[in-house]
Image 1 (tube, helix red, strand yellow):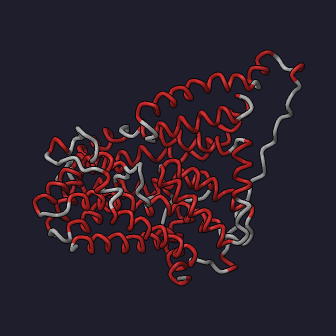
Image 2 (image 1 turned 90 degrees about the vertical axis):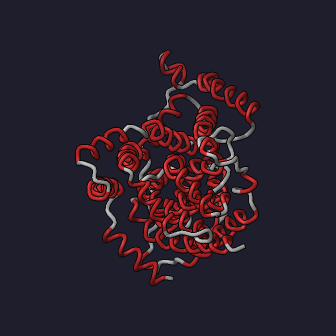
Image 3 (image 1 turned 30 degrees about the vertical axis):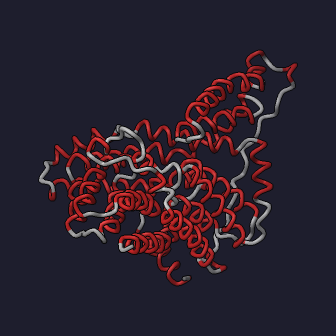
Length: 439
């Protein structure tokens, strides 16, 4: 395992460029693919890119806010105390890896956005305390939990929603009891959890290769003035009541929303929960804004790169490259192999269109129609697609950007470990769908 890990790390460190450069290179690859494979002109491909570029502005802002508000929450005094107690539990590097992976998996299962923030912040705090711990490996273990398909997985949820676009195409409503909460999917999830521990526990770098977390020097804090020496504006900026009063807006909205739909989380609600807790747990608007200033630097990768991937997605969709890839996999499939090839095709396209819901809207109709024609199991096909969409996230820096932003690392620092986990998890998931197709 050490030999394989060292080889992967060297290859990644030598050949994997910065995440921004990778996004640019993918842009060129898809641009040329549209010209040579789909007979599109260069001007058409640029037009597709331009239309797609702005398509993820809303989603990009959501990702910025989930990272920003989660980070600000982690900087509250209460959160720091909780983190201090939790991170005091592990005493050895192995225990630290286990704790971080466990918390990350549980958090990602609830909601992937929540899990990315919690896993990154926890890894950073654990890295400060445990000596002899290889920090990039710890962050990779935290990111490994993102592969889990939980209650916030968009593809099976959409398939279970009455009136969804697939129902209009003839696909019946598929309840989550047949997909997310089927016995075979729960079993697959447990196998992934166990193997995540096994793999990362055995990826032990040699003593000379260990890179411990280096904490940056804390910024100088301006002395707090006594209230009698404050101006009226300064009193407002340092008053807790303003936080508490404004916090009633998201708090009451969340209460009313959950009373109507139950505790059904989505990205917007996660942001509001983080914001509400941050407002109430920071002592004043001033401390809240200082935490925001500290957190904003972690968001720079998202702000710059999400639109680039949206442009790639626009070219893939409008040029017909997505349809071409999907149909090629359909052509070589039968009823038994179709879930496996669905998993592989979803993983491949996910590298270029890293958005589960968007990818399902494009590939879904082709995949489901083919499954019906071949007589393949529809619930298994849906989950194969969902797992494929999450599988290659491990080697696509797009989703690692929030975590890397908090941890202060680059993609090449963790991708060597992620490559190994991608191969192992792919064998487990793909093998499971092959076995299931014959049952």
